[in-house]
Amino acid sequence: MNEAHPPEETFVSHLIELRDRLLRAIIAVAVVFICLVPWANRIYDMLAAPLMAVLPAGMHMIATGVVTPFLVPIKVTMLVAFVLSLPYVLYQVWAFVAPGLYAHERRFALPLVFASTMLFLAGMAFCYFLVFRLAFGFIAKIKPESVQLAPDIEQYLSFVMTMFIAFGATFEVPVAVVLLARAGIVSVEKLREVRPYVIVGAFIVAAVVTPPDAISQIMLAVPICLLYEAGLFIARLIARPTAVPAADTEPTK
Image (cartoon, rainbow, N blue to C red; front, side, top):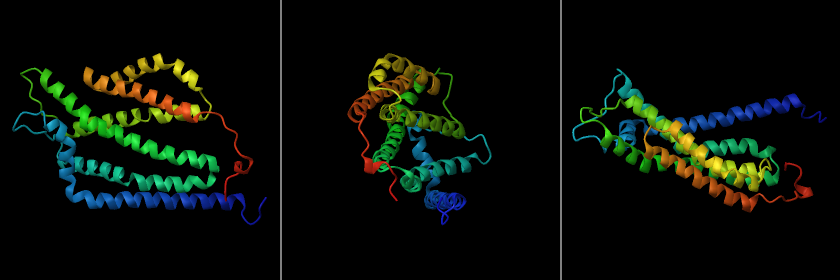
């Protein structure tokens, strides 16, 4: 045992480093949030644009709570601040865990973190620019003539958050497939064999997490299937077992 660095001291130093990096990440998000607060209402208007585009002329969303018109734009601004700060937040996470990884793990983990972030953001963008417009347009067309669309802004925020998380998580399918194959948990051949079950599961998941309209469900299920195929393609390229060099069996110091 190294007397100069007892386990208790090492553990405490890790906790201190974790605290410092969490504080840096929180401060970064807070700074971006403070800078965006003056534009909170405009940011919410941008989020509501897909729905506002299908409302009749002169119609607006409603707020049933007393402080809802203030709180909801602030919540949206906090979300935007976190998304904009995400690269720095992930860097802090990476800087904390990287020293404990093997060299070959670091070479694989860094692209994985980057790809996961980009895919999640791509899922949110796909949902906002395409799914929302088609789904809201479909709902506006099939509603009874006696019904006037006037959604509550808090319920709208809850809906879009659910959809963003659903589509963001859906776009992580290639990462999950690559991880399973790379770790040797499931072979690429087995992943190909379960393809029919994945297709059925994609439509079941889409039916559960999306509104009860066919457009939203199809537009979630189809990307799941396509992204699963993309994950299989990448897994075939990198999942080949390779021997770890002897010099690479210990973490670098």
